[in-house]
Image (cartoon, rainbow, N blue to C red; front, side, top):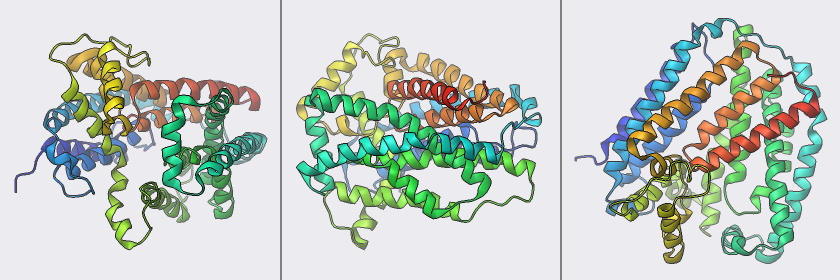
Length: 426
């Protein structure tokens, strides 16, 4: 049988090859590090594989892809983007390859523990605001997770002044809490995983984002923890050749996958059983729903339109994109609630050729800065690398503007975090 949208499969293979090359120490002078490019390859590989499987009706519980008219064009364009981005990553690696043999790790286990304890109040404050928000929602919807999600979607356009500020404060506190989780991941990589402590921190973290009825609380906790754990471990294992990865870490890796499936079943207001778990097991490809957004966008574009030249990436929005979004909201187009990605807004701002140049410059700078931080690997520099990793991860699940906003807020949080704990400067 002839497979459709084969470029999705080529994108997946390209991501796998780059990931393997990363672990084979390509361009890093016999040293392997977890860098932004590592997570970019993993996330876009997973997203591309999902796009290929969905578009060929090999997985999923929807037949949307059966009538999608623009996936071939989108898959070819995405393949071009990935080739350009990986070229930028490789150029940054070869330019900075000498740094890989001059890593200076200016942190220790005792320092990490001390910093985490000093900042634990952030997690408690985040928990308090989260519990207030969660109790407020549950008092209206009950413990029906599907209703909680619907309540958020229906009410987000007319929150009260107080609720809006609670959400705004909670969102900023979330960035501080994420950096606390990064410190926890670093500490865990050095001292080993203590499951009771790990579960306790997870329960303190989740109420605020859980109140929105989505799956964000899973990703927001596990992703930075895994980033920081793997980065710290990759440095520690170079200093200590006998260091072995904690087997409990495999449980940590499996947990978010299982939880994503279970939460999606609850969102769909169905019963958790073997049948529904099998039906929704494809939810591990949740970022692939970004192709629904892109397919609808490509189908809604007028024959001629003006480029945004940065308006979409800055969150202002070009006239054509704003019109399309408004139209989707009126007719309840599924694209309005699908996971976005970095591609649409950059495409509408700079066109096909201009977007390739944009992606090359941005991802070259991200990788180059992360490798430069290895030369003086203070706790603050490690957190900056983790922030850059998080941004590259989010490119598969967030719009270009959301990625930019997350970086700005995260960096401000990092500066404040460094000042409050007297971390070493960059």
